[in-house]
Amino acid sequence: MINPHRVVELLSNLVSERLSINNHCAVNSARDEEVAKRLYDHVESIIDSTHYSFETEDTIDFNDNSSGEQYGKYDEEEDGEDEEEEEDGEDEEEEEDGEDEEEEEDGEDEEDGEDEEEEEDGEDEEDGEDAEEEEDGEEEEGGEDKEDEYEQQQQQTNNDDEQFDEIFMDVDEDQQQNLLHQFSIQYMKKAVDFYDAVNEKTGKKQHSWKSFQHHFHKVKNRSYIGRFRTYLENNGTKQQKLDEIDQYTYKKFEKARGDFLIVHDTDLKKWSLQKAREIHDTTFRASDNWVLNFKRRHTLCSRKITKLITKREVLDADTISNSANNFVSKVKKLLPHYRQSNVLNTDQSGLEIEMVGNRTLSFKGEKATFGKVRSVYNTSHSYTVQFIISLSGEPTGTCYLCLKEKDGHMSDNIKKNLFQAFNVTATCSKSGKLSSSLVKYWIQKVLKPAVGNEKVLLLLDTWGGQTDEQLYSKMKHLRLEIIPKKTTAMVQPLDITFNRQYKHLVRTVYDHVRLYDIDCNLSQRDNIIKLTSLCYNQMCSKKFTPMHQYSWYNGGYLSKSPGSFQNVEELCFRFQDYSCNKKQCNNIPLIQCSFCEKVLCFYHFFVLYHVH
Image (tube, rainbow, N blue to C red):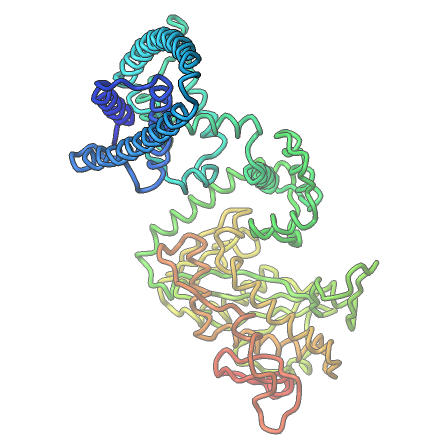
């Protein structure tokens, strides 16, 4: 790093040498003053140019070549000054010649007057010489004062901590322009406080510049401190204030949702305006556009509340989380003793007899949004399905279906004419829900045929109708593990993806039938069995295997992620060909088969029973 004070010293010596060289000739005092003034101006311009040279690549070097160039530069300047002096001398000689000619023409009568003028001129010259001597004395005294000041400056620069002045430091222009992008307000506050710290005993600064740079490496020179002060006095720039408001609002949102509290857009506005007042930002308005951008930045959206919990359950959240983690750890220790296809999870799920979604596109600003169904009664009564899924990501056995029957049973005539599906085992109850006796029937007709005499690990939730080990007494190689209460959403694989994806598939078929007014009552007994068979068949496709494996991975049972996968919406309902695959069929397409990838209408999918 070049020492700028050394540059100034070299230039000062150079000026002194030049003055001493030219001092042998007697020069008019006015000319001395003029030359000194011009040299002083040159020195100032050099100092200024040195300061600016550090902000570009043009830097004054201290090698011999550089010094020669500097001397050459000033030689040219001095030569130019000598030429000006010679020209001035020639002008004076011409003026004197003209005066001699005039004196001869005037005659001898004017000689007496000229003698008197010469005497007056002589007196004026003597007075001028005395004044010049006084001025020279004052200049010498001023020069001594300047030398004293210079020595003090040199002593100051020799101090290790003050060796380089900040205005000569190598500072990148981009860093100067983008200073605020490099430092946060908190960083600036810490830097200024550390720099201003005073030793109580000595009353002097507590930290040296080297010590400061040791703690704050990003601060290149002391000019940053002044900028920091300005920014802090103004409470930061507009962008920094917006960032503070954003961070504060998001932290408040995180805390609220961490406590499962309900949050709306108006709450975001209140929090942001509260922070704006705190940091004295009078221009912030928390507009609707700001709220929209805030939600986009943090991937927030409005969601339906699927479950209500009490404060007590919130306080028990840590206990629930610990029990879930302990259960997963216990199961993972057992996994090496079982084949993946024999590590199973089973769960029941209720579906409305007529399924309907709770969202629709509609007109903005309407007072009430209605949805049309074929039977309100069927939307409030349900039937039950039960699935089995393995650790290998494959649905196991048939789908167990419990229909809702008025008397709790079906007559022999109904059973005889019931739709027969190869992948559905049907039963019924008065409520449409399972009981212990129906669980026993499930073990006999679904579970045992699916696993045989294999060594099996079965994960169940805490529903009392299925946890009695006596129900499984005939399956000697079966081990039950009961998932802790209130942890199924976290560690039960079927609850993580499978059940919701299956319901989405069924609901979409119901919506299609209502929208296009298709003459088919999906709430009838046979149609429920048929639709269950078709939808379960779609879920058994190999293309959904990664999604089923993800359920186990997300629950913590698998350490390796299955990778990316397609869900039901992406695989079955986002098709590009909006016409039925069957020839001469102009019906609106319903679904793309997850097996053959054919796009089919309701008739070719449901009525003609498209299964694989």
